[in-house]
Length: 195
Image 1 (cartoon, rainbow, N blue to C red):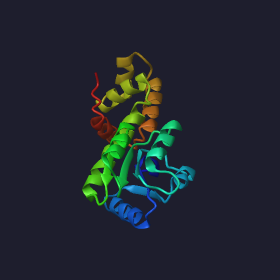
Image 2 (cartoon, helix red, strand yellow):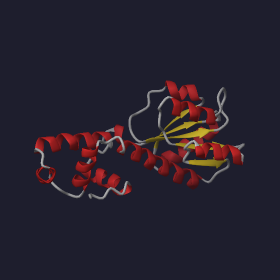
Image 3 (cartoon, rainbow, N blue to C red):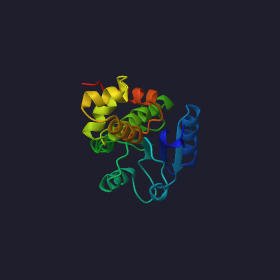
Image 4 (tube, rainbow, N blue to C red):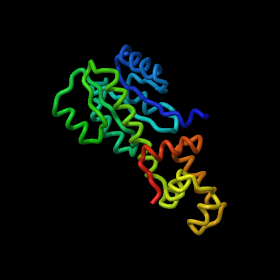
């Protein structure tokens, strides 16, 4: 199992204790995380390639979370965001959600609420990655997860077995799946029924 496939939760909060508490909670459920005190620190970091999401404090030094959300979108960095704040109001949460945030939690929040939002965000990121598959790769993925062998898929699609192997490799790479079982699990979450 390479580290690439493991999802990563990025936490940006200027409060050391909040970062440590969230990181500790994530570690206890087996989720990998990286923490940052500021938005520029996050942008300068080497981020692993795999499903990810961002737990983002609304009030940050230099730039607020909502402005940072817009900056990321403008830069084409599509990462699901969960906002956390000690000073939230309705207009702020509406703006965040309208801009695509997965969740907007006010401190103190329950660990379970944050975990649920993180799992939802990671699933959303997997779906976005799935959408980067070509139409043919999606077809191959659906047939692979239905249990067909490469030779059978080649027959079904009227192509060569080597072409199927290439598409299958692309699917495994793009979906960050380490095994067929993992790919089947992802397909189930994405509700990918062959058809």
